[in-house]
Image 1 (cartoon, helix red, strand yellow):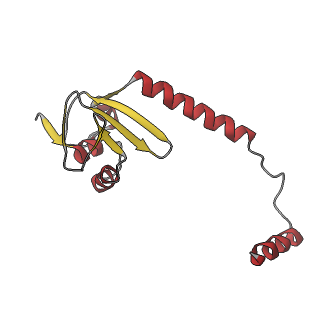
Image 2 (image 1 turned 90 degrees about the vertical axis):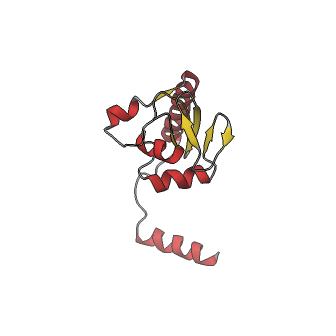
Image 3 (image 1 turned 180 degrees about the vertical axis):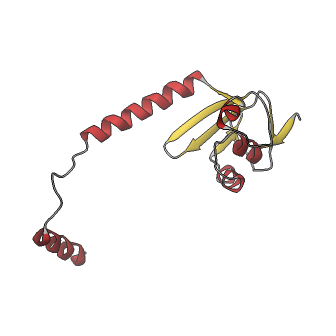
Length: 126
C-alpha cells in the first residue's frame, strides 16, 4: 500500500476518534498537506508533511508509514514523526497555558443565598 485517504490515515494514526470526525475536520480546513488545504478524499503517502489543528494546538508531522487499519496506540505512533519545531511550539503553548491557569483568580468560596439572589437580579436586568 503506497497511498491512503487522509481521513483514514488520521483515524488510523489516532489523531481523531472516528473516521467521520477526521473527514469533518479535514473538510473544515483544520488539516493541511504540504501546506495546502485538502479534501477528505485526498491521498497521502510516506514523506508528506501534515499540519493538524486541534483546538489551540497545531501539530506538524511527517508521515513515516501509511495504514488503513487502526491499531494500538504504540503502533499508531510509528506511523508519523512530529517535527522538532512542532514539539517545541507545543511545549511552549502548554507552558503558557499552565502559567495562565496559575494566575487566574479563583474565588475562596461559593456565593451564599443572598449573593446568588443579587447575581440573578443583575443577570435578569440585561
